[in-house]
Image (cartoon, rainbow, N blue to C red; front, side, top):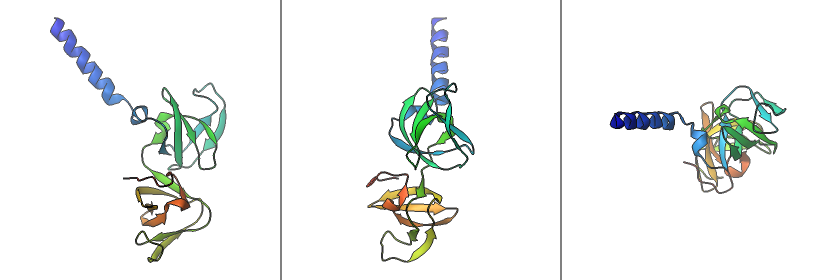
Length: 160
């Protein structure tokens, strides 16, 4: 009987471990993206806190700066901070073009062929950053962009 109780306890623990969301395992600060097409940023970590921003842009990059249970304190590209439920975020790395038009190059060099141009505010996936350049994909149109031209990575950060 003792053996059976122990086995059930281990199985339950394994199920809890499998059900734990990825956001609960990561230690801030880190970047994530908005998974939901609509999300509220709140003034505190709970639904009883008022909404200070309402987002309607799936894929928007956010920087997670703190956590409290299932709630994550995030910073958006404009610098606004507040709390969101962790299940509204995704680990997929995205970035947003900042400043002027960003050029997407065929290789990570300023003198390489410009494959595309992206306007300020365009959001795309990043899959690799190294040496001050990131691979930036906007709906299948991709190229290397200077890391300083996008928000969603820290300066000099290597992303794999």
